[in-house]
Structure formats: C-alpha cells, structure tokens
Length: 143
Image (cartoon, rainbow, N blue to C red; front, side, top):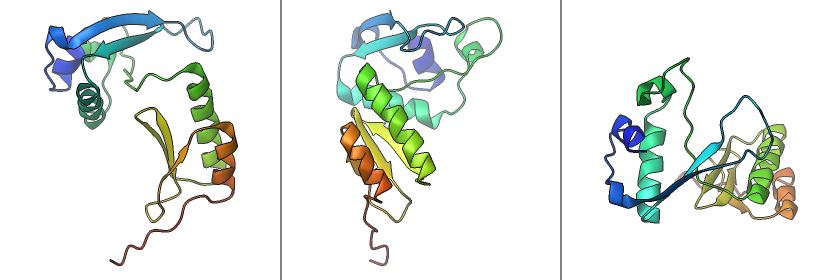
C-alpha cells in the first residue's frame, strides 16, 4: 500500500494502515488474484487516497514493483457482495438506457443521465426502475 501511495504521490504513514487482507472473488475466476482490502484510519484518508489514485490514471503492476507482464491496478471502495451485484445491474441498465454516469460514493450507487441532469441514488433492486423511467430531473444550467 505504501508503494502504491508513493506512486500516486500521496504519502501515507504505516500507522494509518489498520489492516490489509485478501478476500475471495465473488465469481471464482482462476486467472485473477484475490482482491486486497485495506482498512485505513479514517474515511477522509480513504477518500483522499481514492481521489489521488483516480487522478493518476493507468497505474500498472510494474510501476509498483511487481515483476512480470504489466497488469492494470484498480482501487475502489469495498462493497458487500449484494451491493456489488446491484452496482453491476445498475451499470448494465444505465448502459441500455444511454445514461452517461454510474459511480459509487460512500458506498452509495449514484446515477446521472447526462451533465444536464441531477444525480440520484440507487439503494435497492426496486430503484433500478428509476433508471428505466428517466428518474433524474434536468438541472437549470442558465443560472
């Protein structure tokens, strides 16, 4: 974790890392390593690390000292299996309905049709119908 943080120019103290462990894949895929979960000392620190990581696009395994063929490194909020499934369904539905944005913030799934529309939260399977019904309202951009 310290190496990744150095790579994204976000130094972190060892004392800020509470725990690191691996978790099994939701879908058993032999060719992928288990996800690594990192628990840090605060939500603010977590959000700052995620933000710095997203600004530095295309981090690969060779950049953090892992030998072999360079593979992309991903960093996201840890979600429950149920929330991961809901997020996948939400992304698929949004793509069919031509929505531009689907993302996670503070473990909440957010969807926005376009830059001119307000974002709305998806908290359960029943909320998926909001996407199909055009659930966001147009923002007044002339203010």
